[in-house]
Image (cartoon, rainbow, N blue to C red):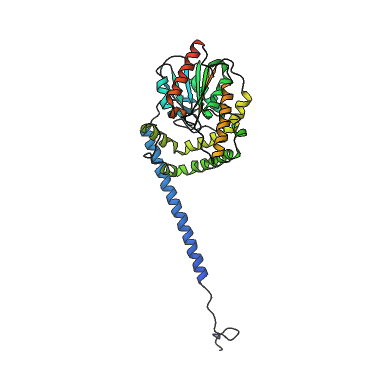
Length: 359
């Protein structure tokens, strides 16, 4: 019988089939599988870490006030002091009741004071989106009714909180007897600021959504755990509570939803805006330039901001406007004394009807 030739059809020796690419592919698949497994293990470990952190937070950082039922959700509301009118503090974007720690306790020595947390922030339960001004005002009014706290109210709003308190005053004008705006947002700011500000806003919005998702796995908490380098004048106990609560998935999701609702909130306020007549009003504005991409933008923004703040002060015939050159956007931290004085003046005006000093 003829044996097969060890040569190919061209007379040369037979070549073995190449095996290296197959081996490389097999190794690549194993490498990919191990990488996926490693990432999954890291995510699982991060998730477990975050669950332990949340349990620790619930024990170590209990709410400072009461949890009020609003449509099956709990809204955190801290009531201090006694007297009328009741002063209600509304925080800025992503902030909650602790942001007023410098101010609320002092004002509470003269009248009743309320600090509270909007849905999803601080100790309050999340709520369905959108989280625009209408939704915020409905929640706040429902919580006040649930607690049996009737007007008259003096409203104090910082940043976007200024938009919310204005909306409250438009919805319930008979209950509001005075307003203090602390470097308040203005419904026309996005139309008048340079385009770079809008671009920065959109970038921050994208980052917030990313952070809200990674917070499930403890990553944000790990990145935001260093309090030693904090140079603000916020007491350490307050700062540690803010840090612990702010790194949660629920908190970051609420901040992202509030940011997504900024423009709708401003449109709502613009549509509802009516003159305040002689309602006592104080407007406090930051004199320090905002942080932007360049000096030219900073100068232009400061000029625009001052004009918008003057416009807010013009909404009442009994108003006072102060620009604080030594304060940034968080005037309640930089100059709590000025905020306290402004609130107490408006409280007195609400009681006896006297106007504030000239603009």
